[in-house]
Image 1 (cartoon, chains in turn orange, yellow):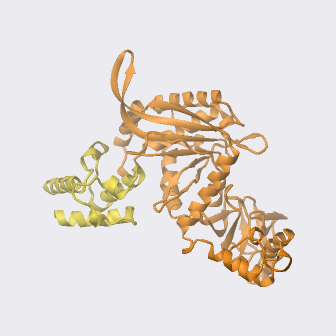
Image 2 (tube, helix red, strand yellow):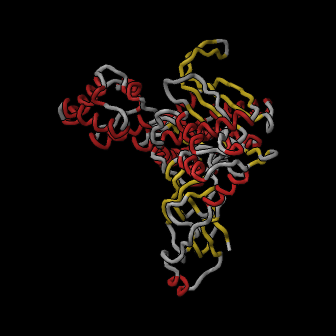
Length: 382
Length: 86
């Protein structure tokens, strides 16, 4: 039997709420099938299965908040008979929920903060951590009045949490963790992309409008090809560096109402630039609508951020843990560039690399940027 | 298609691309991308939508000519008239 667990969708995610099962007991599933939709800080995420088999049981009821790692379903890797399938209706199987709430309560009781039951309940309802309060009741117990005072001292006008607030919180959590734990080093390289843009213009002139390519596809592909030579940058840090076989580039997508999401483009080095553009056409609208799949939120092995046109010249990224690098592309600008003793006006982009100094050194990062430059000077090879 | 009709169509397309903005408040000589905070991906989608809706294909080399509502409308009216003459 395979225990299907609530996957982690990033360092900043602790739980999610099961909105809907997309499969029922008896259904066959294969790797990549959507088994459920889960509401998270990053929107409504489609959760994928990573195994092949038949759904035996769905253990969680829709509407339940589930921490990462909770067993959500049991999958039978072997075949089941048709009769067995028919016996198991979706209504019959979801069992009374796993003790998620109990788990939380148990955790809190371990802290041994004395408090009245009423005070605990009010604190929980208002998301007050009771262990942070100083009790004025008997033997220092936290009373209802203590909790009410803490609530009064909170932000006076707490508004309802909107999706953009949730995203902001998720970004804040991940970036704070990164800044606290990862010793960043930064490198910068100005790259002449005139040749690459001219090549792209020529390619686009033969394409219908809807198939045109954006410069970012060249940046994405060039980054992937350069990473093949520097696998230490395509890695995660988990008490040591762990190189990743697949090059899955997480692309920073800014949301209209603020905040970012970073969906993964899988196996970029194996995709053509047209395939990368097709992926962007699928991924960006879904990312902005906060409708991504679990693998798209969890599989990135490095991040790429791109400022776009008419913005800042350079961007110095913060690594998304547990990754060990982030590559930043600034705006494309025209610059006077000296070449062979002559000055000419060229289209340039400033590329930065933020690396985790525990995993790599500046020399590796520098060589990577040189390799990236080489790729962009030879766009026909991308 | 008249100029007014083209402007109305552009507003509808821009509203779809930038739903949080109000394209009708765009001043004729304001830079569309900067004012409505549209990135290069959305710009391409806008160009695709113009092609789908008005049947006018804007080559990349003309992107610099269509930065404002005024210049874009003028460009599309000319292209629309040229199509009618063919």
